[in-house]
Length: 207
Image (cartoon, rainbow, N blue to C red; front, side, top):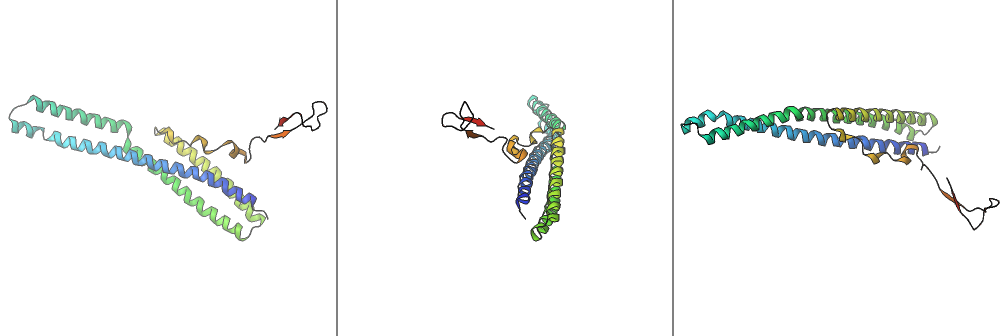
């Protein structure tokens, strides 16, 4: 029995699986970035709040409401407001958790698909009969459909979170991948202009 269909199925699954893993890696990277931004903003607010709390003590030590002191603590208050506003607007901590959650969905699906595929593929390689081949091909079709739905759902959720750049790279699925063969094959046919028979004079392209 030919292994061609089995090998073609493996290649197709592998390419789509790479798309899923690429999306997983970008989700983790985006989650780490949001976590860093959120942590930096929170630390800034805490530090500015602690310094602002010392305003009364500074005034007592100086004995008077110095203009420079008032200006300094006014700047601190403005920075605290800006920091709190940025966190409220961008919601970095919330997005970080959401991106980690989406990456976990990719991981769970990856391990489930890995176990199912290797079990079915092992049965086929051990007994390469038609029943096992049909079972493997059906599992591959189901996995491809599941991956397409999963990737689309994750991309939509990422867009809702304000990160539309997590879409798949445009060149991840080329024209030849759509059908498994090139869209057009060109061959040179030399013809005679009067009777259409092959000749050495003219050439035309047929597709």
